[in-house]
Length: 199
Image 1 (cartoon, rainbow, N blue to C red):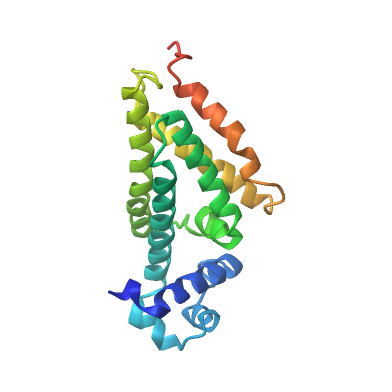
Image 2: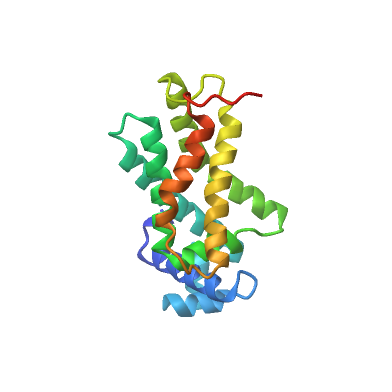
C-alpha cells in the first residue's frame, strides 16, 4: 500500500509546507518534490496530481487527528469532558503545526465543487466522533434530551473551525489552546441539560 512506502509521508509533509507558504494554486508539484528532496517523477508514483496530494494530505492529517482524540477520550465517562478534550486537542494540534493550520483553514477552502465534495467526505470521520460524544451525552442525561444533535454538531464544528480560522488570519499571534476552556464553556451552555433553551 502506498501509504506505507517511506516517501509517502515525506511528500505529504513537504506539501503542507509548500501549500502553506505559496498557496495551493502556486504550489507546483516541482516545488513539493524539491521540498521533499525527491525527483518530480517520484511524486507521481504516489499521487495522480496536485489535487490528489491535497486530498491525501487532508485524509492523512484528519485520520491522525481523529485517532489521537479517540485515544484521549477512550477512558473518559463524562461527555462534557470528552468535548473538552476534543476542543483542546483540535486547538493544540493545529497550534503545534502552523503550516497545517494555514492549509486546513485557508487552502482547503477551494472553489472547485468536486474538490469540496472530497474534502467533505474526509471530514465525516471527525463529525462522526462529535456525533458519538453528543449521543452519549443525551443518553447519559448530561445533554438535553430534546437536543438536535445534527444541529449541535454543526454548531460545535463551526465554532471550533471559525476560532482557528480567526487565529490563522491574525497571523497566529496569540495562544490558541488558551481559548479552550472559554470555547468549551460556550458550547456546553447550549447543549447542557441543566440549561434548557426555551424556543
